[in-house]
Amino acid sequence: MTFDRKIKIAPSILSADFANFGQECKAIEAQGADWVHIDVMDGHFVPNITFGPSTVKALKPHVKTVMDVHLMIAPVDPYIDAFAEAGADVITAHVEAGPHIHRTLQAIRSAGAKAGLALNPGTPVAAVEQLLDMVDLICVMGVNPGFGGQKFIHSQLDKIRALRSMIGDRPIHIELDGGCDPSTAPLIAQAGADVLVAGSAVFRGGSVSKPEVYGDNICAIREAAVGAMA
Ligand code: DX5
Ligand code: ZN
Image (cartoon, rainbow, N blue to C red; front, side, top):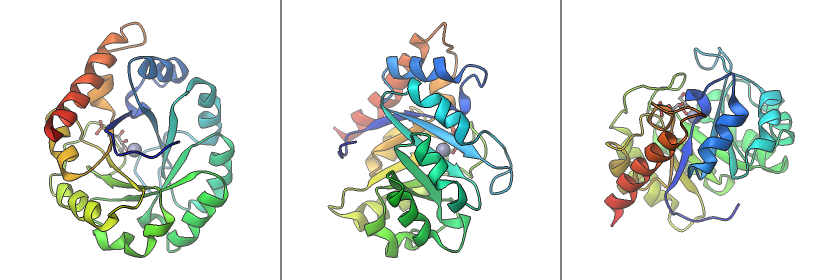
């Protein structure tokens, strides 16, 4: 995984066909996805349940780009090794998931993955100040985590701008997760995010037998974001 600030589109398989994840991952990558975003939910930290490390492991052979695993679980630490062994390239934990996020980030890096830190919409940007040298990615939630297809919370744009200036030259990705579509992508990119997660806006209208719709949707988000930077 090399670092750059080019716009990357990371479709979230939360909006894919749950009976067909392997083919869905292949389809979005063939249609231009830069990363594959995998939402792990536990029904405790968030009010929804998805899947765990064995599903992530089963997906690994189907993902050739970057496996970006977003853990919406608490506690996190007992599961880090399992997700790293499953092949996660990035493991993102929430700052709100427990009292020892510093230890969690250390454990993610020691397990050999890139360390991501996610912030819920209600969490201030100051929460990351003491952690900047321990993270490879900061994920700003554009919605309250748990479900796809929610409306973007515009106040998160200020958080992205503040983070962008706090990060300076450090090689830290800013990811925006939730509510990203061709109408919000320009604002998100201008504010300073480089990884744009999109679930419903990528999978809407397509399927593994109509994958070109995924390609059109990915292109529309990318063009909107890149166009806004020109
Ligand atoms: C929300 C998840 C997101 C979600 C994004 O809890 O972390 O990744 O799938 O979905 P959209 O793009 O539909 O807002
Ligand atoms: Zn996510």
